[in-house]
Length: 367
Image 1 (cartoon, helix red, strand yellow):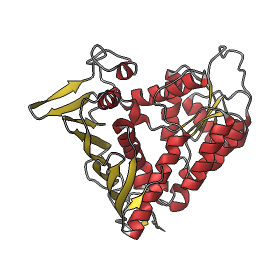
Image 2: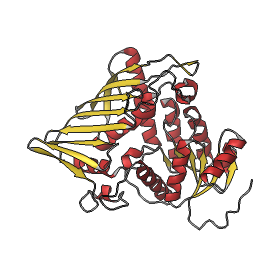
Image 3: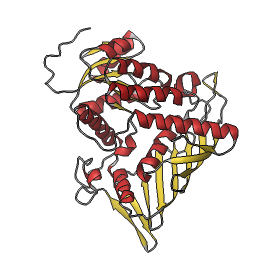
Protein backbone atom coordinates (compact mmCIF):
# COMPACT_ATOMS: atom_id res chain seq x y z
CA UNK A 1 0.00 0.00 0.00
CA UNK A 2 1.31 3.46 -0.84
CA UNK A 3 0.49 6.83 0.60
CA UNK A 4 0.40 10.43 -0.48
CA UNK A 5 2.42 12.43 2.03
CA UNK A 6 2.22 15.77 0.25
CA UNK A 7 -0.39 17.04 2.70
CA UNK A 8 1.87 16.58 5.73
CA UNK A 9 2.98 20.01 6.86
CA UNK A 10 6.63 21.04 6.78
CA UNK A 11 8.24 20.29 10.14
CA UNK A 12 5.57 17.77 11.16
CA UNK A 13 7.03 14.74 12.91
CA UNK A 14 6.23 11.58 10.94
CA UNK A 15 5.58 8.67 13.28
CA UNK A 16 5.91 4.97 12.55
CA UNK A 17 4.69 2.36 15.05
CA UNK A 18 5.74 -1.27 15.23
CA UNK A 19 3.07 -3.16 17.17
CA UNK A 20 -0.71 -3.13 17.23
CA UNK A 21 -1.76 -3.70 20.83
CA UNK A 22 -2.66 -1.49 23.78
CA UNK A 23 0.67 0.33 23.95
CA UNK A 24 0.58 1.04 20.20
CA UNK A 25 -2.78 2.76 20.73
CA UNK A 26 -1.33 4.83 23.57
CA UNK A 27 1.69 5.86 21.48
CA UNK A 28 -0.54 6.74 18.51
CA UNK A 29 -2.83 8.87 20.67
CA UNK A 30 0.10 10.67 22.27
CA UNK A 31 1.59 11.29 18.85
CA UNK A 32 -1.64 12.87 17.61
CA UNK A 33 -1.76 15.10 20.69
CA UNK A 34 1.81 16.18 19.95
CA UNK A 35 0.86 17.04 16.36
CA UNK A 36 2.61 14.13 14.63
CA UNK A 37 1.39 12.34 11.52
CA UNK A 38 1.13 8.55 11.86
CA UNK A 39 2.41 7.41 8.49
CA UNK A 40 2.87 3.66 8.96
CA UNK A 41 2.12 0.74 11.29
CA UNK A 42 3.74 -2.70 11.25
CA UNK A 43 2.89 -5.86 13.15
CA UNK A 44 4.04 -9.47 12.95
CA UNK A 45 1.68 -10.24 10.02
CA UNK A 46 0.50 -8.33 6.96
CA UNK A 47 -3.18 -8.79 7.88
CA UNK A 48 -2.53 -7.67 11.42
CA UNK A 49 -0.65 -4.61 10.20
CA UNK A 50 -3.52 -3.65 7.88
CA UNK A 51 -6.05 -3.95 10.71
CA UNK A 52 -3.83 -2.00 13.10
CA UNK A 53 -3.18 0.74 10.54
CA UNK A 54 -6.92 1.16 10.01
CA UNK A 55 -7.65 1.11 13.75
CA UNK A 56 -4.91 3.60 14.64
CA UNK A 57 -5.59 5.92 11.71
CA UNK A 58 -2.26 5.37 9.96
CA UNK A 59 -1.78 6.23 6.31
CA UNK A 60 -0.54 2.75 5.46
CA UNK A 61 0.61 -0.59 6.81
CA UNK A 62 4.10 -1.98 6.33
CA UNK A 63 6.50 -4.77 7.21
CA UNK A 64 8.63 -3.91 10.25
CA UNK A 65 12.02 -3.56 8.58
CA UNK A 66 10.46 -1.70 5.66
CA UNK A 67 8.90 0.74 8.12
CA UNK A 68 12.27 1.27 9.79
CA UNK A 69 13.87 2.11 6.44
CA UNK A 70 10.98 4.21 5.10
CA UNK A 71 11.68 7.75 3.99
CA UNK A 72 8.37 9.01 5.41
CA UNK A 73 9.12 7.96 9.00
CA UNK A 74 11.14 10.20 11.33
CA UNK A 75 10.55 8.44 14.66
CA UNK A 76 10.09 4.70 15.10
CA UNK A 77 7.97 3.66 18.11
CA UNK A 78 8.61 0.04 19.17
CA UNK A 79 5.62 -1.48 20.98
CA UNK A 80 6.27 -5.19 20.52
CA UNK A 81 7.06 -8.11 22.89
CA UNK A 82 10.18 -7.58 24.97
CA UNK A 83 12.42 -10.11 23.22
CA UNK A 84 12.07 -8.23 19.91
CA UNK A 85 13.04 -4.78 21.22
CA UNK A 86 16.81 -5.01 20.78
CA UNK A 87 16.77 -6.18 17.16
CA UNK A 88 14.16 -3.64 16.07
CA UNK A 89 15.84 -0.76 17.91
CA UNK A 90 19.20 -1.74 16.40
CA UNK A 91 17.69 -1.67 12.90
CA UNK A 92 16.05 1.71 13.52
CA UNK A 93 19.28 3.24 14.82
CA UNK A 94 21.20 1.83 11.86
CA UNK A 95 18.69 3.53 9.56
CA UNK A 96 19.35 6.85 11.30
CA UNK A 97 15.88 7.05 12.84
CA UNK A 98 14.92 8.51 16.17
CA UNK A 99 13.54 5.75 18.40
CA UNK A 100 11.02 5.37 21.19
CA UNK A 101 11.32 1.82 22.57
CA UNK A 102 9.00 0.37 25.18
CA UNK A 103 10.62 -1.00 28.31
CA UNK A 104 12.48 -3.14 28.93
CA UNK A 105 14.89 -1.72 26.38
CA UNK A 106 16.37 -5.22 26.13
CA UNK A 107 16.05 -8.46 28.09
CA UNK A 108 19.73 -8.35 29.12
CA UNK A 109 21.90 -5.52 30.39
CA UNK A 110 24.56 -6.42 27.83
CA UNK A 111 22.14 -5.88 24.95
CA UNK A 112 20.82 -2.67 26.51
CA UNK A 113 24.40 -1.39 26.85
CA UNK A 114 25.03 -1.98 23.15
CA UNK A 115 21.84 -0.09 22.26
CA UNK A 116 22.66 2.87 24.50
CA UNK A 117 26.11 3.12 22.92
CA UNK A 118 24.64 2.82 19.42
CA UNK A 119 22.16 5.60 20.14
CA UNK A 120 24.97 7.87 21.33
CA UNK A 121 27.03 7.09 18.25
CA UNK A 122 24.09 7.69 15.91
CA UNK A 123 23.41 11.09 17.47
CA UNK A 124 19.65 10.58 17.43
CA UNK A 125 16.94 10.90 20.08
CA UNK A 126 16.43 7.51 21.69
CA UNK A 127 13.89 7.37 24.50
CA UNK A 128 12.18 4.85 26.80
CA UNK A 129 8.65 5.64 28.11
CA UNK A 130 9.24 5.95 31.83
CA UNK A 131 6.19 8.18 31.71
CA UNK A 132 5.43 8.41 35.42
CA UNK A 133 8.15 11.05 35.45
CA UNK A 134 5.64 13.20 33.58
CA UNK A 135 3.00 13.55 36.26
CA UNK A 136 3.22 17.20 37.33
CA UNK A 137 3.17 16.29 41.03
CA UNK A 138 6.13 13.96 40.51
CA UNK A 139 8.04 16.93 39.11
CA UNK A 140 6.84 18.98 42.08
CA UNK A 141 8.28 16.37 44.47
CA UNK A 142 11.54 16.26 42.53
CA UNK A 143 11.88 20.06 42.61
CA UNK A 144 11.23 20.22 46.35
CA UNK A 145 13.86 17.58 47.08
CA UNK A 146 16.39 19.26 44.77
CA UNK A 147 16.03 22.59 46.54
CA UNK A 148 16.47 20.96 49.97
CA UNK A 149 12.92 21.22 51.30
CA UNK A 150 12.97 17.75 52.89
CA UNK A 151 16.47 18.05 54.35
CA UNK A 152 18.81 15.06 54.21
CA UNK A 153 17.38 11.96 52.55
CA UNK A 154 16.80 9.27 55.19
CA UNK A 155 14.56 6.55 53.77
CA UNK A 156 12.26 5.60 50.89
CA UNK A 157 9.20 3.38 50.91
CA UNK A 158 7.70 2.45 47.55
CA UNK A 159 5.61 -0.15 45.77
CA UNK A 160 4.04 -1.02 42.44
CA UNK A 161 1.11 -3.39 42.81
CA UNK A 162 -1.26 -4.91 40.23
CA UNK A 163 -3.61 -7.91 40.25
CA UNK A 164 -4.06 -8.86 36.58
CA UNK A 165 -2.14 -12.14 37.01
CA UNK A 166 -3.69 -13.11 40.34
CA UNK A 167 -5.48 -16.28 39.22
CA UNK A 168 -3.85 -19.47 37.87
CA UNK A 169 -5.88 -19.08 34.66
CA UNK A 170 -4.55 -15.57 34.03
CA UNK A 171 -2.01 -15.57 31.22
CA UNK A 172 -0.05 -13.20 29.01
CA UNK A 173 2.91 -13.41 26.63
CA UNK A 174 5.04 -11.75 29.32
CA UNK A 175 4.80 -14.96 31.37
CA UNK A 176 6.71 -16.74 28.60
CA UNK A 177 10.40 -16.02 29.28
CA UNK A 178 11.21 -16.48 25.59
CA UNK A 179 9.01 -13.50 24.74
CA UNK A 180 9.02 -11.54 27.98
CA UNK A 181 12.53 -12.17 29.27
CA UNK A 182 13.98 -13.69 32.45
CA UNK A 183 12.24 -11.11 34.66
CA UNK A 184 8.55 -10.25 34.45
CA UNK A 185 7.18 -8.33 37.43
CA UNK A 186 10.35 -6.37 38.11
CA UNK A 187 11.31 -5.74 34.49
CA UNK A 188 7.74 -4.78 33.61
CA UNK A 189 6.71 -2.53 36.50
CA UNK A 190 9.61 -2.57 38.97
CA UNK A 191 11.66 -0.78 36.33
CA UNK A 192 9.13 2.09 36.40
CA UNK A 193 9.30 2.18 40.18
CA UNK A 194 13.09 2.29 40.46
CA UNK A 195 13.32 4.86 37.68
CA UNK A 196 10.95 7.04 39.66
CA UNK A 197 12.95 6.54 42.87
CA UNK A 198 16.22 7.65 41.29
CA UNK A 199 14.60 10.46 39.28
CA UNK A 200 12.74 12.00 42.21
CA UNK A 201 15.38 11.42 44.90
CA UNK A 202 18.17 12.62 42.62
CA UNK A 203 20.58 9.86 43.56
CA UNK A 204 21.17 6.28 42.46
CA UNK A 205 20.56 2.96 44.13
CA UNK A 206 24.04 1.58 44.87
CA UNK A 207 23.29 -1.82 46.44
CA UNK A 208 20.31 -4.05 47.02
CA UNK A 209 19.08 -7.31 48.48
CA UNK A 210 16.10 -8.96 46.80
CA UNK A 211 13.76 -11.90 47.02
CA UNK A 212 11.47 -13.02 44.23
CA UNK A 213 8.52 -15.40 44.14
CA UNK A 214 6.81 -17.30 41.34
CA UNK A 215 3.40 -18.39 42.62
CA UNK A 216 2.29 -20.51 39.65
CA UNK A 217 4.77 -22.66 37.74
CA UNK A 218 2.40 -22.96 34.79
CA UNK A 219 0.15 -20.54 32.94
CA UNK A 220 -1.73 -21.18 29.73
CA UNK A 221 -0.46 -24.75 29.56
CA UNK A 222 3.21 -23.78 29.51
CA UNK A 223 5.92 -23.55 32.13
CA UNK A 224 6.59 -20.15 33.72
CA UNK A 225 10.18 -19.19 34.49
CA UNK A 226 9.90 -15.53 35.53
CA UNK A 227 8.66 -14.00 38.78
CA UNK A 228 5.25 -12.76 39.94
CA UNK A 229 6.52 -10.82 42.97
CA UNK A 230 9.77 -9.09 43.94
CA UNK A 231 10.69 -7.53 47.29
CA UNK A 232 13.79 -5.33 47.40
CA UNK A 233 15.74 -3.67 50.19
CA UNK A 234 18.07 -1.02 48.79
CA UNK A 235 20.55 1.70 49.71
CA UNK A 236 21.12 4.94 47.83
CA UNK A 237 24.37 6.82 47.28
CA UNK A 238 23.90 9.02 50.38
CA UNK A 239 23.13 6.04 52.61
CA UNK A 240 19.32 6.32 52.60
CA UNK A 241 17.59 2.96 53.02
CA UNK A 242 14.61 1.94 50.94
CA UNK A 243 12.05 -0.80 50.51
CA UNK A 244 10.28 -1.70 47.27
CA UNK A 245 7.52 -4.26 46.77
CA UNK A 246 6.53 -5.21 43.23
CA UNK A 247 3.65 -7.59 42.53
CA UNK A 248 1.30 -8.53 39.73
CA UNK A 249 -0.75 -10.59 42.21
CA UNK A 250 -2.04 -8.04 44.75
CA UNK A 251 -5.82 -8.50 44.77
CA UNK A 252 -7.71 -5.27 44.19
CA UNK A 253 -4.65 -3.24 43.22
CA UNK A 254 -4.88 -2.19 39.58
CA UNK A 255 -2.00 0.21 39.06
CA UNK A 256 -0.91 1.19 42.55
CA UNK A 257 2.47 2.83 42.11
CA UNK A 258 3.35 4.67 45.32
CA UNK A 259 6.48 6.54 46.38
CA UNK A 260 7.14 7.99 49.85
CA UNK A 261 10.40 9.81 50.55
CA UNK A 262 11.44 10.69 54.10
CA UNK A 263 13.89 13.48 54.87
CA UNK A 264 15.32 14.96 58.04
CA UNK A 265 12.90 17.92 57.79
CA UNK A 266 9.79 16.56 56.06
CA UNK A 267 8.39 13.75 53.90
CA UNK A 268 6.72 13.60 50.48
CA UNK A 269 4.36 10.95 49.12
CA UNK A 270 2.91 10.42 45.63
CA UNK A 271 0.37 7.81 44.49
CA UNK A 272 -0.07 7.26 40.76
CA UNK A 273 -3.75 6.44 41.15
CA UNK A 274 -4.23 9.88 42.77
CA UNK A 275 -1.96 11.90 40.47
CA UNK A 276 -3.39 15.31 41.32
CA UNK A 277 -2.02 15.14 44.88
CA UNK A 278 1.29 15.33 46.72
CA UNK A 279 1.28 14.59 50.46
CA UNK A 280 3.71 16.76 52.44
CA UNK A 281 4.48 15.47 55.92
CA UNK A 282 5.93 17.61 58.69
CA UNK A 283 6.40 16.85 62.39
CA UNK A 284 4.17 19.80 63.24
CA UNK A 285 1.46 18.71 60.80
CA UNK A 286 0.83 17.50 57.27
CA UNK A 287 -0.90 18.85 54.19
CA UNK A 288 -2.26 17.53 50.91
CA UNK A 289 -0.90 19.68 48.10
CA UNK A 290 -3.15 19.76 45.01
CA UNK A 291 -1.89 20.34 41.49
CA UNK A 292 -2.10 24.03 40.61
CA UNK A 293 -0.21 25.79 37.80
CA UNK A 294 -0.48 29.04 39.75
CA UNK A 295 1.70 27.76 42.61
CA UNK A 296 3.78 24.82 41.34
CA UNK A 297 7.46 24.50 40.60
CA UNK A 298 8.37 25.59 37.04
CA UNK A 299 9.06 22.05 35.79
CA UNK A 300 5.71 20.90 37.18
CA UNK A 301 3.87 23.88 35.71
CA UNK A 302 5.19 23.31 32.18
CA UNK A 303 3.53 19.87 32.11
CA UNK A 304 0.11 21.18 33.15
CA UNK A 305 -2.18 21.58 30.16
CA UNK A 306 -5.40 22.35 32.04
CA UNK A 307 -6.25 24.59 35.01
CA UNK A 308 -6.38 23.32 38.58
CA UNK A 309 -9.43 21.23 39.30
CA UNK A 310 -9.50 19.62 35.84
CA UNK A 311 -7.97 16.17 36.46
CA UNK A 312 -4.83 15.10 34.65
CA UNK A 313 -3.64 11.47 34.54
CA UNK A 314 -1.75 8.73 32.71
CA UNK A 315 -2.79 9.74 29.19
CA UNK A 316 -1.65 13.31 29.84
CA UNK A 317 1.68 12.06 31.24
CA UNK A 318 2.26 9.88 28.18
CA UNK A 319 1.36 12.74 25.84
CA UNK A 320 3.83 15.01 27.64
CA UNK A 321 6.56 12.38 27.28
CA UNK A 322 6.00 12.03 23.53
CA UNK A 323 5.83 15.81 23.14
CA UNK A 324 9.24 16.05 24.86
CA UNK A 325 10.64 13.37 22.54
CA UNK A 326 9.51 15.34 19.51
CA UNK A 327 10.82 18.59 20.97
CA UNK A 328 14.21 16.88 21.36
CA UNK A 329 13.97 15.67 17.75
CA UNK A 330 13.55 19.31 16.73
CA UNK A 331 16.73 20.15 18.63
CA UNK A 332 15.24 21.59 21.80
CA UNK A 333 16.85 20.97 25.20
CA UNK A 334 14.40 18.93 27.30
CA UNK A 335 14.84 18.31 31.03
CA UNK A 336 14.09 14.88 32.41
CA UNK A 337 13.60 12.99 29.13
CA UNK A 338 14.17 9.26 29.82
CA UNK A 339 16.68 7.99 27.27
CA UNK A 340 18.26 4.68 26.29
CA UNK A 341 20.76 5.34 29.10
CA UNK A 342 17.82 5.14 31.52
CA UNK A 343 16.65 1.97 29.77
CA UNK A 344 20.12 0.52 30.34
CA UNK A 345 19.94 1.57 33.98
CA UNK A 346 16.67 -0.34 34.40
CA UNK A 347 18.22 -3.44 32.81
CA UNK A 348 21.21 -3.23 35.18
CA UNK A 349 18.90 -2.96 38.20
CA UNK A 350 16.78 -5.85 36.95
CA UNK A 351 19.80 -8.12 36.65
CA UNK A 352 20.97 -7.06 40.11
CA UNK A 353 17.57 -8.02 41.55
CA UNK A 354 17.66 -11.43 39.85
CA UNK A 355 21.26 -12.03 40.95
CA UNK A 356 20.54 -11.07 44.56
CA UNK A 357 17.45 -13.29 44.66
CA UNK A 358 19.44 -16.19 43.23
CA UNK A 359 22.48 -15.73 45.52
CA UNK A 360 20.39 -14.61 48.53
CA UNK A 361 22.84 -11.83 49.35
CA UNK A 362 23.46 -8.11 48.89
CA UNK A 363 24.57 -7.08 45.39
CA UNK A 364 26.44 -3.92 44.41
CA UNK A 365 24.73 -2.11 41.55
CA UNK A 366 27.02 -0.99 38.74
CA UNK A 367 26.98 2.80 38.23
